[in-house]
Image 1 (cartoon, one colour):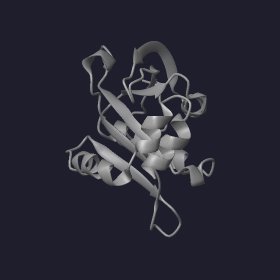
Image 2: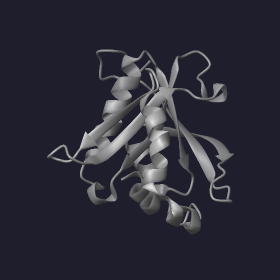
Image 3: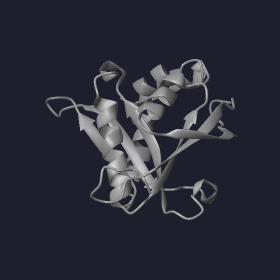
Image 4: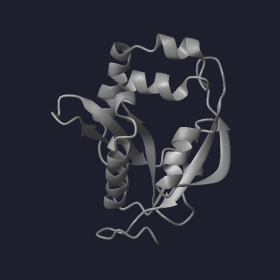
Length: 167
């Protein structure tokens, strides 16, 4: 699912050669490492109706780089969110997004960041619909011999037990 999502979402942003050589079996070691990390690192999964296939997932963590931390609030990161292209626009992405935001808040974070390719208009629109705002911080991301630009988004997180994202 992850490889299919990368190929669909990043075609035209990341070099085709890189996308075409992605191999799910070779990515398994990275997944095993990620899944073994202690909290607050977590992967949240939405399955199809029979729970036999991952439809979407989100990965969360404490902010990975100090430069991304809010100056006064505990900061988490939505490190990844992907949906199987076969279930795009069915609510699977929304489901894992909402679970990720709730989990970040549940771990005590009051602010969150994420990074998205600047040219990924579909993802940027998704995040904006879900309360994220670009703070116009840009960085190049080395992938496949190219350096597409990523844009940082951030948002306040709800206090535990509330649906209000005000801080």
